[in-house]
Length: 213
Image 1 (cartoon, rainbow, N blue to C red):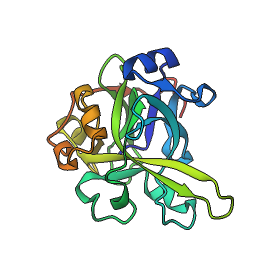
Image 2: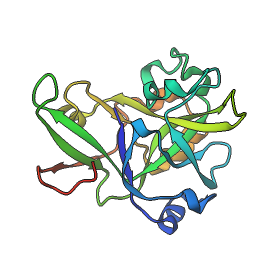
Image 3: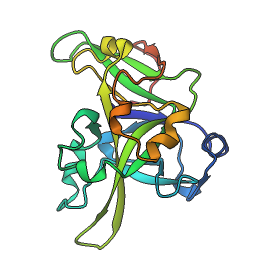
């Protein structure tokens, strides 16, 4: 799964990597830790305009939802069941790239997770990458505000992630740079399920290491 992500790069580097302009620089706030359960606004690129970087809230709210309470259940979406789950099936062809340069996962050493080891995972050198994402536009029935929200799509864990995420054995789908436009152009989701993968690098965060969470 993926509930804790990071994006620490500054605007010029992000714009250069994705050949896109940030729409609202005031919203662009690099962070060592985006906690999904706080439903933060993070930078994404949507299929409707791939030359613009915008900010949507993590935690997809489907258009039919009565309120925001569903978000805690929609931070991630399993690629194997996208067309079955009511929360996601209307967003299969609403594709986005979720911009990041790392995420965090814990390896459990007991069945309840009381003893666990934290890892920082990325593609190496803290380089930028994107998660395969889906988005939705939801209208708040009380205020009339239209909210943009997204989910990160996950798949079966590869060898490295099966060892780290050793209970549920899942991982976020990190796209190869050459496949980012393919995802936005609505290629079949089946093409991105495991064994599709990129090479990942994991760094153990030892007890006592400075961390923001």
